[in-house]
Length: 483
Image (cartoon, rainbow, N blue to C red):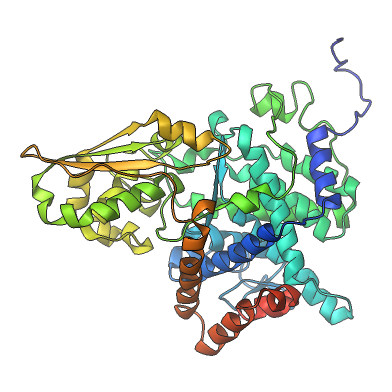
């Protein structure tokens, strides 16, 4: 095979991965009832988590216009607020709300991430278009259409994550939020297959943000608005492709020297385990019980089970032993001082110490007031973390997708607790029957904590019936969350 002529200005055909995404978004028909059911719960869980985030001033300060006064009456609304914004800034705000507490859905594979992040772009564009259609006598989008776009965004992000590890080249997983949101937002705006490919090429040319803000010694709150930033970029690319007719870059991935593969992915092309369908939404993981980084969810569950046997003997503890998967050991095994809440909610020792001591783990437990308790750092200092190879094998097994952890506490007198192991958390597909009622309780409690009682009643009434919810114009549904 001859080497390409790097001097030639002849444009090649678009890279196949970009075409495959566009073909899927345009042509694929979602037939899975399970995918729609799960997407409905995902939407409610994400909006509930957004309401919980409104209790945190550091989140709320990001939710308004990019500068004071830059509002768009009749534009896209930000749930739980009175803001009406252009769809680009609204995508940032909604994406930031959804991700702030790290307390809804997750996808774990070679890459990890949170496919619900794409709702930042999807809801912003849907509300903007639907309110515009309502004013102009057109047909607004329904919630069912939003669910369809969400299933497709989940599938794009999740299928790329199955075998392509962006974290191993130092890039943050929100690069896949930008990819998926760009594709579906362009379609929502009426983009053609070619315009979707154009927008996707722009997304890849953006390259990726570094994971610096997720890891010691630089962990910080940018990780809580990184997905919102990806949504904002995605809507910008979609608008540019559809409304402004920008040109695309057909070999954005494969171009020698200057393409994404050579610049950022060690010269390797993407690999895929399966064609696009509805697999990711059907198998997505929910965070139901604890606002904890997902690799630690089962570790927190283990610690909760051990609380009764340990809380009265804290001064007698010799060591705490945590066994986790390779990914968990690599990204959340963290020693030394923790600078802020973003450090703490990505530290497995912290996330185990709090429930061992207090029998709980809530979003407030990452705040400075709780972290100041000397018992927490004392227990962290006695904690040993190691990889359990079986947990790692089960983590990557496509038939399992487990996220196993075990916790055992040893005392100075030589005694010890049982070794408690949990293979998969309550938010796993295998525990849906157990998890969904708790998810709905979590949703209702979140609404009651932020919205007026009459709004809560209206939301619960419409969400109790899937057919009614699916048929509802999206601007009417989101209007129920507006203050």
